[in-house]
Image (cartoon, rainbow, N blue to C red; front, side, top):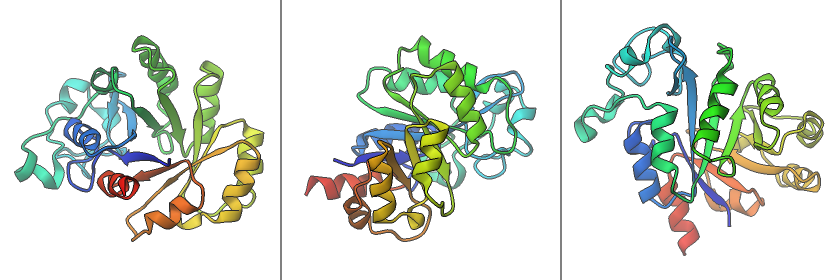
Length: 240
């Protein structure tokens, strides 16, 4: 069975990377939740996609320039405010409180591609340990140096290398760097690529952008998981 991983929660129907989006994703039947983390000015691990606030909140500027208290004053409901009311930016701690007793994979994307947030890997792993979630998490990032830092801290935690374009022989790169997962964008994936990765023992979680996608065809490629804005659609397909 292909893992149904909700992309930033149930983001097609609820404000992304908020607690209501995570709760509704679970209700929709997801097997996992993918979300993004940054550090606040005072070093708290917060959940938001962009490095800046304008995209999904009523704030302006960089996440890293605000304290947690200041970030908590912002409305993160985005275009869903009439439907959900005011939503606040969650912390990783708050998210872990929600999922700690659930049979759910948490795919934590380290958003270190623009700002590296020194120490973020240690902070994330400390919280994983505190909640005893070592066997229920997967770390991913477009910044592969960040993944190497995580591996040095916690070699037992599986990591996925994110890509948003085509790769030549990704199985060789992922194997040589020493990661367990390949996370490609959907349009770059082919059957032969999946087969080459599987021969190396590398798992494949494909992420879907905004383009129309045939989920059933993706499943036929033999991927391990689909990171989707529509966890309800994946659940319906797999329930047939």
